[in-house]
Structure formats: structure tokens, C-alpha cells
Image (tube, rainbow, N blue to C red):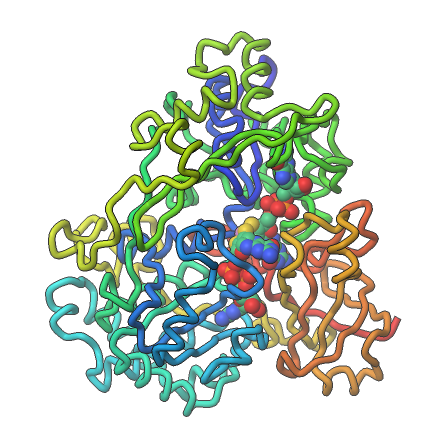
Length: 592
Ligand SMILES: Nc1nc2c(c(=O)[nH]1)N[C@H]1C(S)=C(S)[C@@H](COP(=O)(O)OP(=O)(O)OC[C@H]3O[C@@H](n4cnc5c(=O)[nH]c(N)nc54)[C@H](O)[C@@H]3O)O[C@H]1N2
Ligand SMILES: Nc1nc2c(c(=O)[nH]1)N[C@H]1C(S)=C(S)[C@@H](COP(=O)(O)OP(=O)(O)OC[C@H]3O[C@@H](n4cnc5c(=O)[nH]c(N)nc54)[C@H](O)[C@@H]3O)O[C@H]1N2
Ligand SMILES: [Mo]
């Protein structure tokens, strides 16, 4: 701190589970004098949410009940279930299946035949990263055929003529070339979506890990809006969510790293942190406090991330297990697990926003401690105790719940407490949209003000078309899948789960396997411009020819399988959010 300044300390957090994952070391960092929080956000829903916010003020979620058409778009809810849905609806996928029983049609847009695709009326096997082309063609047909909601567009949107002009040349034939989808399927989906009133879209993390997440997801929101599907029963709605007492209690001490370049991204994007560590800037990151995260394995370009982490003067990792990131640490803080510390979480749902408490069931073993108490103790020893309104986990929970409408005592009795009224539709008629103009901004003056294109557009992903020369050596497009039995890089050390999915696989289409003399179950090499790994081949037509799917989440010391992210490049990046293309990279598969 004395030598380089407090802002050279960074905190890095992973995908949140309980509220403690959002809050850990936040107060500490601000009290210490650093505004710099980083993590996995650039790969996970933050860009999608922030991009859609520019259009409609808030990301609208699917309201399956009463819907006539459900589009599952880059999401795999069967394997990647969402926390809270089970508590709100009895089981995570109940509303979706209930709507199906009422006759809703189901369309899945995914490069891979996910479990829901097998039950769908239509599976559109799209080329990875090309969704914006499909979206523009849908808009083109819907606008040209005047299938949009003309009253809504007139009263509640700005920028419609500009959007219409932008998509004018995006004909289904054009999109067909890029997406690999038949022209007829594109035209049919445009009619189906515009004439099935109401229709709903479940957008997912499949749209996140590409270099154009901002353009793609703004187009999703634009499509929902102009067809009159926003905040209506059976459409895409703004669910109520609980409000917690504001946190942290301190102001951010100055501008975060990346704030000027990526002002719409609420943290410091990890790729920017990596670049800055590797630069000669005197103010570069020098120390990192990693909590509940495995940044070495989950970011594109493992080699570069490893180099950056190795340059830090101090790397502290708080985890339950010896992860690949923890192996690099100077200091390891043994964390208490979910069952060894109390916590809570807020959820949005149709029935209202609710809060659920997680009870402590066991004492943490050995030197492990609840994170909020560890944070407080660290702050106390550094003379920062007075920034803290809590000392214990329970006091932290009380602090956060103070103005929420629920108390810890309530939650101990009820487990789940609703703190808002149930969902109300068409809220915009009363309170407008929460954008600068109060309307849906199909063209965004705020984005233009950042020197960026005010309208969303198609950008060619990492593909054979974008890099024809590279494609001569690496002719396949690699993408990755999350495994239902694991969460990201976790749980391979649980024998019962490991028994179900013992090793990392690469899935190839039969035609690609045959052409390479590869049989199901054989060891193969997968190489990309960034590196080379060995995996076991799985031959299946659940993906198209020319695309291979690699299993994400392996690479920790005890799992003995390689990390797919060593093959993905960290460039190019999304212009607004620095998202990298973890889900499309050029590669080649050959017999080992
Ligand atoms: N190629 C590719 N890359 C991806 C993805 C992909 O699908 N494909 N997915 C992306 C997405 S969506 C995300 S969110 C990120 C995930 O990125 P991360 O969140 O960084 O990954 P996790 O593996 O969930 O790491 C969580 C770590 O926290 C530890 N942990 C679990 N519980 C506790 C606890 O109670 N206390 C403490 N101290 N530690 C705990 C676990 O042991 C684990 O090491 O990866 C992203 N990267
Ligand atoms: N069991 C389990 N549950 C989880 C997680 C886990 O790791 N394991 N992770 C949690 C986290 S942090 C998250 S973010 C959520 C994610 O949950 P979801 O939002 O459902 O996202 P994913 O499971 O990553 O699935 C995304 C789908 O998008 C597809 N896809 C990939 N690229 C593209 C593309 O370019 N276009 C289209 N249209 N589709 C594409 C993939 O093939 C995949 O089927 O799940 C959460 N729940
Ligand atoms: Mo995520």
C-alpha cells in the first residue's frame, strides 16, 4: 500500500451462490482505499444484463404461464438450473412444462442438441456466435411485413426508423449463410414469434461468451419490445426483486480500473486486469484477494492468465480446496463452506421478490472461518475496524436485512420471506421504462456518447469466415459445455459425481470423426493457436459438422484432465464489456 498505493489491491470473486459471495471483502477493499473488484462477470450474465439495460432499462425474464411460444435461446435449463426457481415454483422447470402442457410451442436455438431440444417443436442448430445475424433477419422480416406492434412502437420506443434501416439488408438469405440455418426456418420463426401472442424468450449464458454479446443481447431486447411482448402476461417481464440495505456503507474510493474504457461494466473486467498486470504501468495491480473463484481456469487464454497471476507480489486465495489458482497463491485462507456459515440470498419471482436464509449446520473444521468474520478480523488488524458495522456473520446478515422488510428471526421461522408484492404487468404505463428517455431505446444516445455504435449490429465471431488463413490449419469451431453434475470447476473431487462423469470429453460430429479416423472413446489431441490438450473423443450428431464441443470446468490439480480455456483466445473482446470468446475458437482434432 505504501509503495504502490491502495488501488493496486484487487479483489476477485466468482459466480455468486449466497449473498456472501457478492459482499465478501467489499467493505474491506473500500475501507483500505481500492475501488477495484474483478471476477467472472465479463463471462457471466453481467454483460447481457447491462446491454439489455441500455434498451429496456432492465433485463426482462420469461413468464412461461400463458405463453404461446417459448424460445430457449443459448440456455440449458435442464442442466444449468437456476437457484431460487425451485423454491418459488416447487421445481425449477415447473412453469415451463406447465406452459407446454397448455399448448405452448417450444423452439430451442443452440449449436448443441440439449435435452430440451429433443422435446422441442423446432431445434435451430445455429453456428456459435452468429445469433445477431438471426436476430437481425427476424427483425427484418417482422418490420418489412409489418408484423410488429405498431401502437407499442409508436408510443413506447425511440429509434425505430434507425433500427428498421439497420436491418433492412439483413435478409434471411444473408443470415442463413452466417448462421448455417435454412432460410425457410428463419422466415418461419419470424412469423411464428410475431404472430404467437404472447411469446417469450429465455436468453442464456450461451450468448455471453462471445465478442458481440452487447450487440446480440440488445437485439434480443429490441425483438421482445417491438412485438409487444414486454411486461405482458406470457411475454418477457420485469419480476419484482427484494431490496437490501445499501452496501457498502462507504463510497468507492476513486475510479475503478477500466471505468473509462468500459463505463457500463460495473466492475473491472478481468481481461483488462490481466493486461494491466502485464504492462509497465506503475499503478498496475500488485496484489489480489481471490474469494470463491478460480480465475486461472475459467478465463480465456490460461497461459496469459497464469503469467499475470505469477507477476503479482501477493496472491491470496480463500477456497475450500487446493485449486489450480490456489496452487499459485502466496497465502491460502481456508474458507468455511456453505454448510459451515450462515448466509442468505434474494430472489425474484412471479409471486414476488423473496429472501431465503441458509442456516449454519456444522462448525468449520481446523482453521477455516466464515468469510465475513475473516474479513472483519483482517480489517481489525489493519486498523480499519471502524468501517465495520458488523463483527459476526449474524450481525452482517442483520445489517443487510435492516430495511428489506424481513428479519433474520422471520427467516429462521419461514425459511422464505416475500418482501415485495407479486408481479404486476405493464408497469411502464405507470412509471415508464428506466432508460434515460423513459422509453425503449432501440437506438441508444448513451451508447453513442461512449463513442460506440448507437445501434446493435452483427459482428463476425471467431470463425472460419473471420480468420480464413487460420482456418486452413484449424478448420473446426470449438465451443464448450457446462456439465449438469458439476458446477464450473467444482466437485470433481466428489467420488459419486466423478463416477458419473469421470473425464473431459470432446464431442465431434460423425462426419468429422470419420474423416479423421477417430472412434468414440479414443484419446485425441485438440489444438488451437493458443495451445494443445488431450481429451477423450465422443462421437455424436448432437452437434453439426464443423463444430466440436469441449467439456468446461476441468483442470484442477486432482482431476487429471486439461482445461479447455487454454485453447480460447482472450482477443478480440466485446467493445462494451470486454467479454472474450470462450465459446468459440478455431481448433483442430487429431488422433493422439
Ligand atoms: N469455456 C468456458 N469458460 C467459462 C464458462 C463456460 O461455460 N465455458 N462459464 C463461465 C461462467 S458462466 C462462470 S460464472 C465462470 C465461473 O467462474 P468461477 O466462479 O471463478 O468458477 P468456480 O469453479 O465456480 O469457482 C468457485 C471456487 O469457489 C470455491 N468455493 C465454493 N464454495 C465456497 C465457499 O463457500 N467458500 C470459499 N471460500 N470458496 C468456495 C470452489 O471450490 C471453487 O474453487 O466461468 C466462466 N468460464
Ligand atoms: N449444474 C450446473 N448448474 C449451473 C452451473 C453449472 O456450472 N452447473 N452454472 C451456473 C451459472 S454461473 C450460470 S451462468 C448458469 C448458466 O446457465 P445457462 O444460461 O442455461 O447457460 P449454459 O448452461 O452455459 O448453457 C448455454 C447454452 O448455450 C449454448 N450456446 C453456446 N454458444 C452459443 C451460441 O453462440 N448461440 C446460442 N444460441 N447458444 C449457444 C450451449 O450449447 C448451451 O447449451 O447456470 C448456473 N447453473
Ligand atoms: Mo455464470
